[in-house]
Amino acid sequence: MYILLVSIIIGLFLAMLFVNVYFRAKVMKTYGILVRNRVQFGAEHVFSRQKLEAEILPRYPQFRSEIEAFIRHIRYTIKMATVLIALITAFGAVLMYFK
Image 1 (cartoon, rainbow, N blue to C red):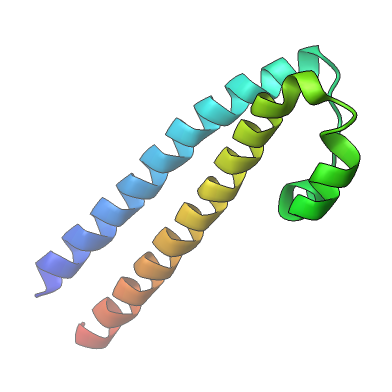
Image 2 (image 1 turned 90 degrees about the vertical axis):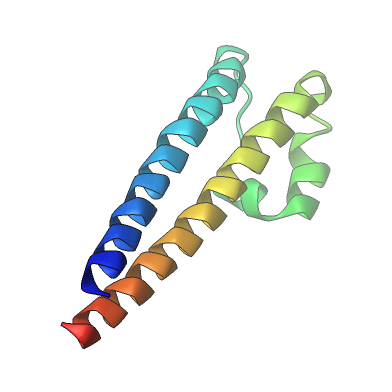
């Protein structure tokens, strides 16, 4: 049981590392396009769809797909990291209990 839990924790950690690297590459690609074209927006626009549609998308309509891809990748990265951290913590707690 101990070996299985340690293997699961190591696997989840590697999954988190892979997800981080993969989405960081995707985020940096779209971020580079936005920076080169001087598209600016804040964190409140990433987390509020209404603010994004009201303030940013009308200002940069030609970069709508890049802005939405960037925000989608950021949100997905945050969700995946949260789930993986919760799983690692849960398996770590179980591992501490069985040790």
